[in-house]
Image (cartoon, rainbow, N blue to C red; front, side, top):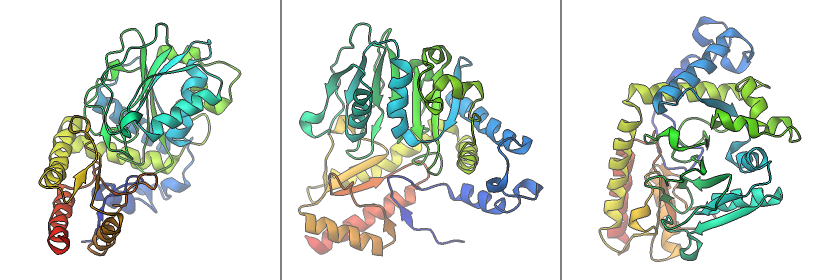
Length: 360
């Protein structure tokens, strides 16, 4: 069996071994067709089946209603920071945003660059983005409320989604997409970079309610127009074919392993392994308020930066990568996405115990 290290990277991140092995088997000759998916025309019937299967499986996993369209786009979630206001604020209305970290800040800035009126109705910046705000009021006649479901850098996550009444809810779900069940009907639009939980880099999944497509103005770039992208779903131009193929395999892996409810159950157990260790004593210190803790990204600190550097270096030597905190905040961060096995979480905690003994 191939030796695998413990991959705690924040994205691109771990993929299921089963998926990688299937992709490897089909890499040169996909299902006896005599060519790789990398070589296949996106207009070919064989590839069209790959695309349709991915759409179907995602729709089943999330129970997505028929009045929503699934798109596999390019440009990452970062492009969506601009596409959302380009398409949904063309009528001159304002939009509400809740700022819970770096990526929410970037989404706000992109909307403002476009000259759109943005109302930041709540923020956790006052405490270095270590909690999710629970007190806010939407602006009357706001076109939408934008939230970031999970914050990869600071390690906070919405435990439940806000009731926005008549205001449409838009969500950047990049780093906890497909990690738990979600009532899609609560959202007008969801977008998610694939490279955290459902695939490799290069593809962004968008789930958009169909009535919003009429808001897309004609005077924005074609590739940024949801309405145009939806007329030939994911096929207006050449899509990220191989990324979509891998996403399709991951979605089948999720279905095979019990779906999103089962995945949430596993993710809760994995995260508990590390959070229990962080709460044990003060050698390691969690940085997030307990009622806002993420299941996906768990940052923590040691008593000094020098000790943190030593921890990360020795962990890497022990077969654990991706533990260095984001460059903007430092510290240590362990990302526990779907494909990370619970054995990796336990191995990390065992290492933490040994490291404490040697450095107390």
